Image (cartoon, rainbow, N blue to C red; front, side, top):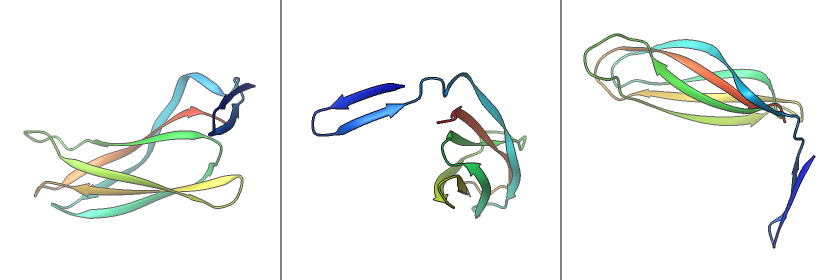
Length: 108
């Protein structure tokens, strides 16, 4: 257990065996958006204690670079599980396909 105390900010602790030297990564979903379209995806029943980073990776081959934005919101179902809501926006007039990718940085 690693513990840290700060002045007027409280005491924090984290199990040191929970951090991974190599994050677990993968593709959770694929999607498509029409030009200038915004949609929302979700993925549920992920352990609430995991630290996860979500990214959106365009897979549509086209000249130039696809322009997208995304935002992630976490909704706790209970003490054990969470749902991630990922809002993706296509910032170009062209159709776009993409993958929703994750990286689990720690289990605690």
